[in-house]
Each structure stands twice: as C-alpha cells, then as structure tokens.
Amino acid sequence: MAANSQMIRIKIKSFDHKVIDETAKLIIETAERTGALIAGPIPLPTKIEKFTVNKSTFVHKTSREQFEMRTHSRLIDITETTSKTIESLSNLSLPAGVEIEIKMLQQK
Image (tube, rainbow, N blue to C red; front, side):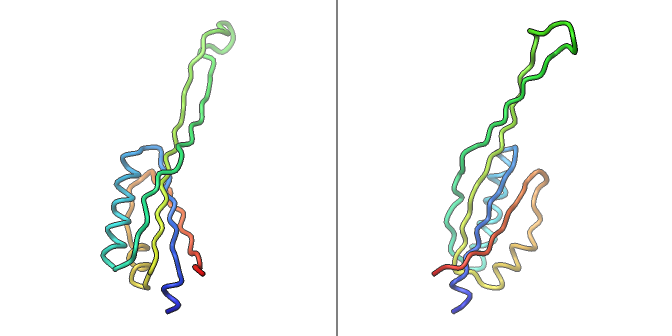
C-alpha cells in the first residue's frame, strides 16, 4: 500500500523538440509496461533566450547579429509505481542532449 502513495514527477528539457518528444515517448512506454498510470507529457512553456552580438569588434556599431536559444520542456507524472517501474526507468538509455530531473513525491 505504501508504494501506491508514491508519485514520480519527471521533467525533461532539451534544445531540440524532436528529441524531447522521442524521450517522452520512450519513458511513457517503459512505465506503461510495468503497469503504472501516466499523466502527460504536458508541454511546458518554451524558454527563449535572445542574444545580440556586434558583427565587428570596433568599427561598425550598427551591424549586429541576433541569436536565440529555445529550451523545450515536458512534464510527466507517473502514479501507482512499483519497484519494477523505478528499476526500469533507471535503466533507460536516453539520447544525448536531453536533461532529465526526477522527483519522488508523496501523495496524500
């Protein structure tokens, strides 16, 4: 009964939206095979960082280049977990360029 009161919250971040969707799909398939209930993937707002850089070092002040970095994130909640669910999630091999944050939460 104590295993059912646990919830796993997984937050995935990546610069490439295709890679993050593949990773979310892989995590969901793995968790479903062990019989856990899944909520998500919930797309979180994309964080956009913009940078403006001078093209020339000294002379042409008005000549500039702009770059932006987009960080996509997804949230997956897994409930009714078992030890098999946790073990199979820890053994996953994930693609490069994906950051994963896993939190164990207690349900009331």
